[in-house]
Structures are given as C-alpha cells and as structure tokens.
Length: 140
Length: 301
Ligand SMILES: [Zn+2]
Image 1 (tube, rainbow over the protein chains, first blue to last red):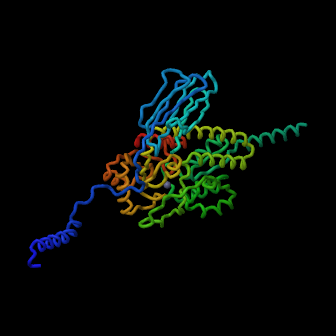
Image 2 (image 1 turned 90 degrees about the horizontal axis):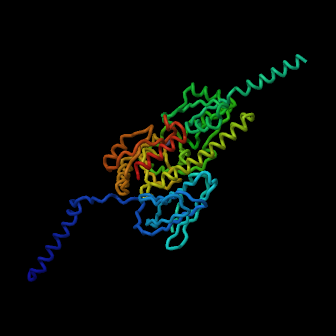
Image 3 (image 1 turned 60 degrees about the horizontal axis):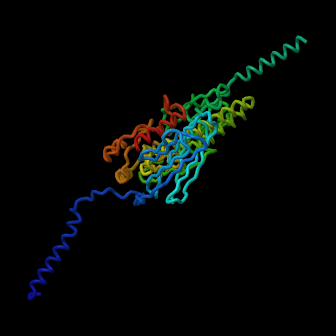
C-alpha cells in the first residue's frame, strides 16, 4: 500500500465520497416538484376531428368546443363543416346549435364526426325553433 | 222529494269539503319538498321539517318535529343513511299511519369515497355506510324520485290522480330540459379541468354523470374530520393537477378549506349547494342545480 500513493489517494477519496453520501441525503434541498398525482396525466395525442352539421331546413348553425373559437354559419344554411384539433385520449364534447324558423315546424339537425374520414359519431336531434344539444365523442 | 234533495246537497257539500282538505305532507328533504309542491300543487300542504340552510347531517328531530311528522299522511325522506334517526322513528310513524316515502329506495346508489379511516371520525350522530346519500345531484335520480312521490300521492289521494300525473309529466319534461341545459353548460368546460375540490364529499353523483373527479376535504358527512396527512395529500394533488378553484358549501365552510386555498394558490370558486336547496333562486331544485353548474363552469373554465 505504502508504495502506491496514487492508489492510497484514490482509496481516501472514495472513502470520503462514501461518507459524504448520507450527509448529502440529509442536507440536499427538498424536491420542489409536488407529490405525484393519483391519476397520471397521459401525454397528449392530438387529432383533427372533422365535424359536419346538416339540416332538414335552413338554420343558423353553430358548433362549439371548450377552449376553441366556435364555428358558425353565415346566415341560414343547410350544412356547416368545421374541424377541431383535440387530445384524442380525451376529446371534448361538441355543443351544436341549429336555429330554425319556428314556422318550419319539426326540423332535424344531424351531426357527424370523423377522424381522417373514419366515422366516430353520428347523431340527429329534432325540434322546433332552436335545436341544441351535446355530442360526446367516443375515445378511440 | 225535498228530503232527497237535501241529502244529495249534503253529500255534494261533503265531497267538496273532502277535496278541499289538502294531503298533509311533511319532508325531511328540501329537494323532495320542492318536488312534492310541484307534483301536488294545491292538493297538498307541504311542511318542511328540515329547512334550507340547516345541516341535515347533524339535524335531530325535536319533539315538535316528531309531532308534525306523526300528524302528516306522507313523510318524505332522502334515505341511504342521510337521516341517521330514520330507523329509530319509523315504527312510531307506521303506528300513526304515516306513509313513508324514501327517495333512496328508487335511485341508483353509488359508493362514497370514504377512503380515510385513519383520523376519520365515524362516531358522529348520523350513521352512514359507504353508500353516498346525496342522490339528488344526479337528475335521473330526481326523475325517479318524482315518479315515486307521484305514485305515493295517487295512492293516498286517488281523486287527484289526473292532477298528480299531469304535474309529474310536466316536471319530468322540465327535468329533461334541465339535464340538457347542464350538458350544454359543461361542454364549455375542458375535460382536463373537471376536478371538484369541495368541503365534504357530496357531489359524487354529479361527478359520475358529468365526468368530474372529486377531491373532498371531509368524507360523505359534514361531521367527518380530515387527518393532517389527508390535507397534505390533497394539497399535493391540487398543485399537481393545477386545479383552478376550490368550492365552499352553503352550510359548511371549514377553516381547512381556507388553508388549502392559501397553500395551493387555487382561488375560492364560490359556494355550492351540497346538502339540499338554498334560498332565493337556489330555493328550487332547478335553481339549485343551475346555480351549482354556473358556479362550477365559471370557476374552472
Ligand atoms: Zn352531505
């Protein structure tokens, strides 16, 4: 041992480093990150949802999604298409509106939702005057 | 001939007076009292024993209340353990000929998230299992209970059948419209934001219907006390989920809620009606539901 000063130095340094570990564990700053939540938040997989509204009579049409600008028809129309980019793991609900002329009687508002042409949801709502409802998009 | 006419007149007068006597209904639930008024109209007289603003979790009937209950023909109760004293008073009521209508008998019950048994005080006045008794936060449950009340009224007062059934039909339509209104309002709220932090765990049915997660400071009763570990964990959850707002209740506003708001930076989201109806616009079921939904959407969107 005596003849190997480099080895001695290495051993002393290693010993000191080992002794330092518990001290470092005790004195290191507390992690600032909050405790893990019970439900891990999945990384977002964004997808483009194509929405098509069609009606049995002309109506002022609108479709809304949380946190995004709503898409509205310019005046009465019998169709309206829109697209929304949303987290595919948890797509938002669509609020759909068709404001018909009450004189037109019972009218239908059909809502179709697709991703890359593949149908995901297809609902039809009936009513007189303002027809409004919510479409829940199934998770893929 | 004269005699016959007199008898007929007397019989008609008796019939009219019999109809004028309203059905005596007492209620331990503010929600069921509202439904009873809407279904019964002028044919019933509803006495609210537990009034809005009273904490029903810790309420105990006074001798005067017991007398009112015994004098009623129908007594409305939430059930599912909400009225811990119900089993105690049931035999006496049955002896007095009171028909008991328990909402919890016709709803779809869910389990309460009674997860904290360490430091969780179960020795409180009201008894509850793990079933969540706050069923009225699901509109479909309220529709079932409205039909149940209608049937009870028809059984007790068959003369009023047409009125009760017509009123119930109208009420069912209004409840369906309310359900759609709720869905339309909540569509404006991103799903990632659907986290409800409340005083006690009363909104489980609302959460289940509308895709919310609940973090409650207390258990399903206002008398459940949170442990310090639970509060600490809750603060961690709120920070991790970046929860925007924390809600107080019209009856309870524990200091611990204030501590959580201070430590997490989440803002006070407003007051929710958890254990029944409130006053003013929240004095009806529809008003209460609309107030809660508007408060939630406004605070979390
Ligand atoms: Zn409660």
